[in-house]
Amino acid sequence: MAHRNKTIQLEESDFDLAKNFIQLNQPEDINFIQNKIIQQDIFSALPFLPEKFVDLLIIDPPYNLTKTFKDTTFKSMDNQEYQEWFASWFVPLLKVLKPTASVYVCCDWQSSVPIFNVLNQHLKIRNRITWEREKGRGSLSNWKNCSEDIWYATVSNDYYFNPDAVKLLRKVIAPYKNDKGEAKDWFVAQDGVPYRLTYSSNLWTDITIPFWSMPENTDHPTQKPEKLIAKLILASSKENDFVFDPFLGSGTTAVVAKKLNRHYSGIEINPTYCLYAEKRLLKANTDKSIQGYENGVFLERNTSIKKLHSIKNTFNSQKTYSH
Ligand SMILES: C[S@@+](CC[C@H](N)C(=O)[O-])C[C@H]1O[C@@H](n2cnc3c(N)ncnc32)[C@H](O)[C@@H]1O
Image (cartoon, helix red, strand yellow):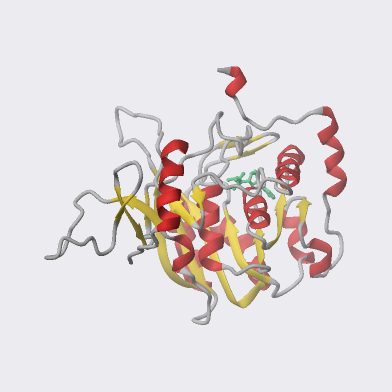
């Protein structure tokens, strides 16, 4: 088993990567922070961030749960206090947004309401994505928690959204043929299974949380999957746009932005997590792959490599897409 463990580990030489971190101690312009990681407490960095430079803001804050992130422990509080804590950095952060910017905020069911209350005062809320976590801790006194939410909002009615960039290749359960026996919007791949290319809904069941056999995995306790972040970036930004993440963790947003040719920056208080981010960014110089995203389409969860190749071949030769 151990030899198949692909979890990213820090080696002695990786500690040198800390020379890439920046800190903000005075007002800085976009060139200073572009494609850099700000290793700092968000509250001390906020006053020095430039204004109106962000096209896409992705936020994965500590949820309202007691959780330890290396040296800092986030303590669960009541809903009103969490809402106030959220607003205390979110409202000052609004200055970074361009008038055409989009914003995504990750949360669980408990933090969803206080976060909505703050977003609703400042942005146009457009949707809430719910995604299924495969694993969750069972409980004898409550439903197992297997879903998370992502609020989607924009600054104005002038915003970018590209549904064609986030289509999902799905197995067709009941393939329908017309009177002439023709399949209109699906095709049979080399594995004999009918597939359809569909527009993405706000219910995602194709996401896998990073675990030990995935090359993106680190020991960050709440690392988001690259595939999930790739959907947000592809739908709501163009190449060379600026993507910002104020709670960067192990660097997932920055890494995916780099792989998809966007500019990035983000804030993370913990230096070890920043090192993971730097190591992943270095790897992204040569490896642009995103697990579960192939040839410009997203694949259903746990699609095997073998099957994937047969789909890819058929897919390349037979461009029959549906809405
Ligand atoms: C939910 S995690 C983000 C995980 C990230 N999306 C990833 O894929 O790795 C939240 C992060 O916020 C960081 N954090 C907590 N308080 C912070 C603060 N005051 N300033 C900056 N970062 C903070 C934690 O260290 C943690 O890594």
